[in-house]
Image 1 (cartoon, helix red, strand yellow):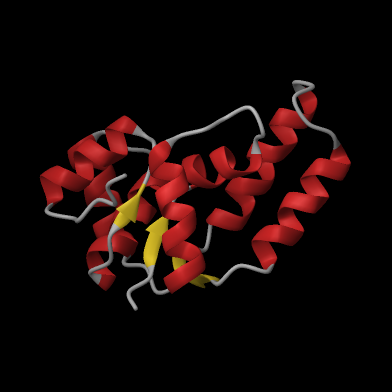
Image 2 (cartoon, rainbow, N blue to C red):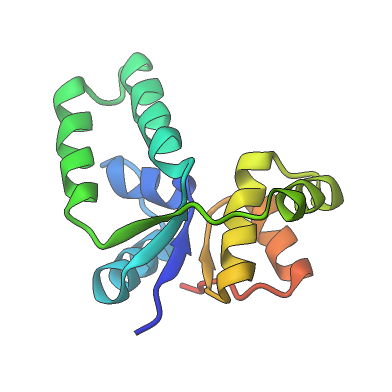
Length: 135
């Protein structure tokens, strides 16, 4: 049982009733079966994305609380053992945000597949030799 690295784009897709994507569905199945790993920043990114969607009127606070409860019940573990130099190098080399580079660094360092709906992150992962979760 190999966990996967999931980024916020995948999780937000899970949380929004009006969003559907085969990769997000596959990532949910893999996470439920094998667990997932995320960089430490993930919990704040997810909360920020949900709050942004509240402010846009797509969801309400009750929905946010329910989705955060659902996520807490999943086997998602935070990884805090990042190599900051590698993260900065990945961000510079591939034009990524430091946040996105943290997902890639986690996947590379732990030799885990990465699930993302972010095109630039997926391109950087492929160029770096990371395995991507496929739908």
